[in-house]
Length: 454
Image (cartoon, one colour):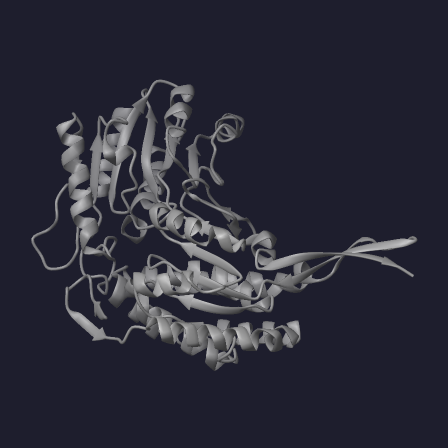
């Protein structure tokens, strides 16, 4: 398997992929060791995760450099990702004992009752390339702490990062039998789906997630899917600082070159401020710096996948053919690498792909609305339900809107953020189940009810 730098299109290295036989062998090792791993005291398991946390800090420079080389995100954002992963790991370290402890429901009386949380067994984690540290630690960290063993498949686009994760976990004291990595693309994923795993945890596209869900349904085991989004954001007419609001919205659109599941993918603006918003947004977008992700002060790096450049270009052409106005961008620069200019389209509507299909790139459509009701109707006009945001100084107005939105996360005067104490979950085509929060700790366990007399 060739590992390509998306900024230069040069081959970084070549790595041997796993076969069905080698993946099965790794699974058998995990299956055999899981009972022993579960008997390791919880405090000892947590101590190993603490060491992994510390190693992320020690090795941060190399880890970020490898991440930038293979996925193309600006280096400063790669460093931010490693720091963000450490923060999430700290949440699991500090909260797992509390939420994995036996929970007494009826501690006294003739029949005492409690809930115990037992590990699922061997879990499969098919992870994503856009935030391999962040989406990875959401799964394999609480899974390991809870006493599961883990078969981890990094995306083929973030293989080096996957190997770095494996190396540091083993260095931190996670036994070989508790964590194994499957290297490869769809064939490796298929091999994992054929195994008798006790849970499947996937981050990626709706199409692949649906396929996995259907494929493993007969196994009757947990299947948690963190899928994509077409996340809306509404700017009301009473905002007080236009420039600051635009700055926040634009960051939500283009951070990680727009390759975030919770990136802002469509913007609705009240007609009273629409023209001024579009003008300010366009100007700030024009000021973004695009270039090699290793350079200083780069806002936009290359897209990770070459075919995504073609898709975004098709969205621009589709929108313009249906009456949209191209305010800035709209094409790939005449350089090597999978780049696409930050692109702003106004006068858009829901007949256009840019307002209905996940873009996953530095492109946005801005649509005019007459009032809050129209904004809500358009925000709800989607098969996805990951996040939604409202910008207004009026909290009551914002909450009235947010209550009507069918999504797992809502934001008031912010966007494109994840917090470890809160559950991360999607609705409709954005997924099922949840990671993070205490829900994401117990997601890797079976509850067992105890009825105790005597």
